[in-house]
Image 1 (cartoon, chains in turn blue, yellow):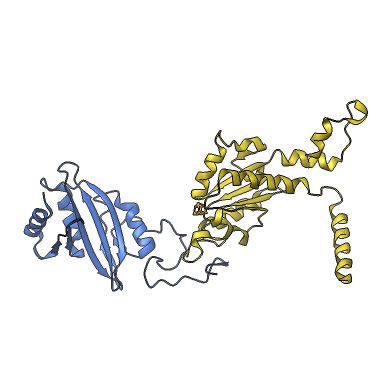
Image 2 (cartoon, rainbow over the protein chains, first blue to last red; image 1 turned 90 degrees about the horizontal axis):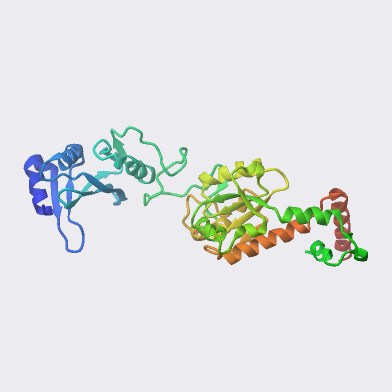
Length: 158
Length: 182
Ligand code: SF4
């Protein structure tokens, strides 16, 4: 299936929750969706006969300034097609439904996104820091992150 | 090493070698250093090359140990993050005296590439434990590891074992006198 066909298919099922399709040459086409419906959309993407996205290649998060974005790269082993799904949430309340129960890969990926950018994945069974120490404060990959002066009496910047 | 050379030239042609006990002990110590390898990042990968047959790190008499209690020195190879810095310190404190530290690579010497923006990196392992030998490079060539190991052996060879306090006091007093004169 091409990206346009996938977009149409999702649009017929979820209507206004599927926000837009962006197709550019040289980059993967992506579909922007409403985060509120993300879990159901992902479920359909995985289980619908004509889609069967059984493989999550990566989950990444990014700082968009006002908002935080989460990007899902999906691939279907059966149909050999791929699609990119994007959502964005406000920094004040960065809650995105967890897709960990759909693709087990998402478990650690979501923990990393939470660790470094502070995206809160609703429904994740164990959302704790994965790389930084548990008592670390703040989310260091955010643009407005201020490096602390010390960590456990060790000086950070010189 | 002096003691070994003297074996070729024994005293009065018979099986007697004259030397200091301290030299003998230090010779033994410097030629059988067991180490705790603390591999942290890419420098540890370079250390694998050093350990393999081509460069053969074990020819220095070093044997890798997995327990700090059996190690003579700790080799810190790579990026010391704050999370690991605390663990390094615990392991260093568990080692028995006399103990030494070799810091390998720019990262563990000074923070290296993470000097400016490394919010998570300790800027040099010498800020938490005392370092004896620094090996520069990013990563250092195996030849640099060899040089570093030779420097550590040199240091061990020169160390006092007996009457340490007396000798240190003596050194200090001579230093003080020379300071007063100048
Ligand atoms: S000094 Fe260079 S090679 Fe060594 S750990 Fe740091 S970045 Fe890696």
